[in-house]
Image (tube, rainbow, N blue to C red):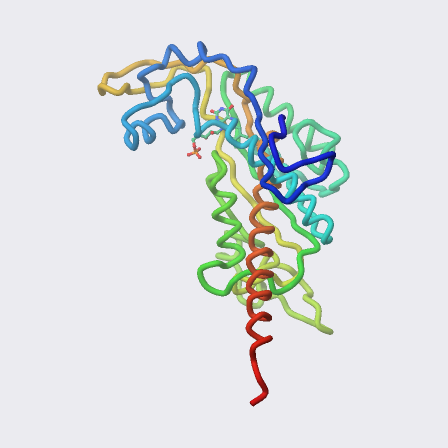
Length: 299
Ligand SMILES: Cc1cc2nc3c(=O)[nH]c(=O)nc-3n(C[C@H](O)[C@H](O)[C@H](O)COP(=O)(O)O)c2cc1C
């Protein structure tokens, strides 16, 4: 990463920080066989519909490479939030049908699949290797937990905290599902089972996932994200080209049979960027209203 501006002698100056990440390991020739063909599961068809022109030598803005900038800038947002007691952690809850049973956050960075369950890690790894062996891919679920967020953050109508986080997280490629708290399970529960009762001013449960009415409760914000299996697989698939002709296509190249371990830092970074935005907007509005207070008279 090259820092182009905004940092001087190890400190931010207040000027915008510009970062440059050069992709030195690109292999454009991998993409030549499907120059005019729409790869299944990729954005080739929709980009073609929208722009009518396509640089086929890579996924461009639909590629996971695009997320490097999010992680680099998210690191700064995360630092600011951590200084204010906010901790953001995402991990693999499920990969290829294997679910983590224990949630020991200290385990996450100790295994290559980034899961909080050391035993499940081995089975998740095996599920990925099996998919690779079969020239196939697997998806799974990422769980996100934010602790230390104060109660009262978020807007009540269009800028709901969960709506903003949903927008930020669903902007990451390959995410197809978003749940807050008990998520889709709430559909099968009764009100009595689902309500978070309070005692002595404290919540007894957190089914709502730390958000009520679009505003943070002060309890951990819990979100789950469903990731689809990697689209690029080295199997024969049917595909059309820009002229409508049919092809049998095999997508070769360097592709992970599971996106999740690499997407976890992206999820954490987008969360940090989104939360800092929400916090900043709220703080700015408070500052503006206190300015108006200065002009108020008792008369
Ligand atoms: C960090 C990251 C890495 C990714 N790597 C790959 C990959 O190696 N191969 C692939 O087919 N898709 C990969 N994707 C997913 C595609 O970018 C995405 O599925 C595709 O552009 C279609 O968009 P959609 O799935 O959001 O509809 C990656 C996504 C992320 C977030």
